[in-house]
Image (tube, rainbow over all chains, first blue to last red; front, side):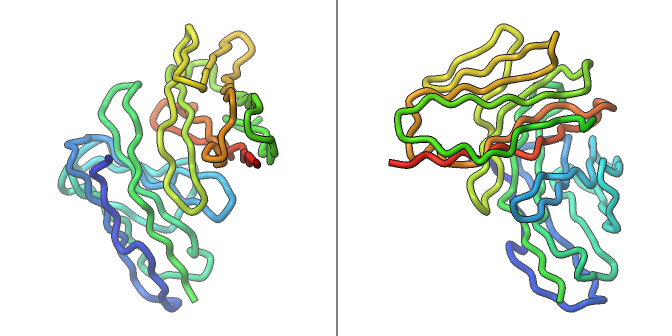
Length: 113
Length: 110
């Protein structure tokens, strides 16, 4: 079983609120990722990190921001939530190298009213 | 051309059938290929890695064709529990992260 955890699992919030989606892993993985997935649609990479103090934007533009102050923690923040941000956000991590398996958290399902 | 393309299906097959999915990719430099499985409203989980020489895990066989730039997944003797969306995964053009295809949906019925 993967040791990667996301909170909250479900969040319903009003427009304009600031939200932070938490992601933690206890596997000592350097690489961490955030993907966004709408129902029945593909996963889109929105942020990734190769280690502490390293963050990069992914292939899909996102208004969210991330930080990586500790190896095990990779939170995602939306300063002002909008209905267009309604989606599922999946955090993942893996070891360095090209063959490492990607482990996913259970996801955070965000609904912005 | 999208980096990773899959036939979305759905593939509706009876139990016991053999079914095959293909996934084409545009990044000829990609070194790592995987098949992931995603159940409805769940996170993706690794099904198997895809090696250059092809590999088999029970009823599942994965193959890589670098010349034609596609990977394939063959499922033999389909079970009801195989019903899911199958995602092909590989490194993106920049080699910085893993990207996912849209997924192929398989529905196995009795």
